[in-house]
Image: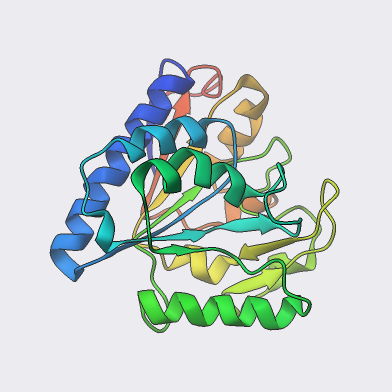
Length: 229
């Protein structure tokens, strides 16, 4: 895992957007499209706003979700609501693959989303980039401590139990681990202990189970307390 420590959340967001732009241009040149997935969090909205202003071949960009709350359309807790405001609208992004969390049969909906991944990113699907955050409890995506979804090995998309008031749909470890690049974006002193465990590959926390070989970790100075690059 490559680690970069930046002064503050704004610097992290700017650097993250620049890395995504570089990966996008390389992917479009090599494969004719860039397929990436984004998560929720504080810094990502700064990152996505910066990304929306970039000069990219947006017609060749496919946006997927890492996870989504099973909440009504337009709900403020929906990840898609904020992604629309910060990236999809400003960039006029057309190839948006939203998780079908409004479906009556969530298990079937998760299977359909996995098929949508395959239709764009191959079989098995390999996303060009996955953006991940890190919770103070060590969760990433909606892979949360104690949830059975942590042990899903035969599906790329699954549905969780209730966490912080919502069930969620999430990419699973197999889907994350195939990504050509994993981009961790983490800010805030309350994350410092978990950042150290992530770097150590501590498999006792969900984030520590994501493969680190092709990962870049961007942290601000407060989240980097206790370690050196």
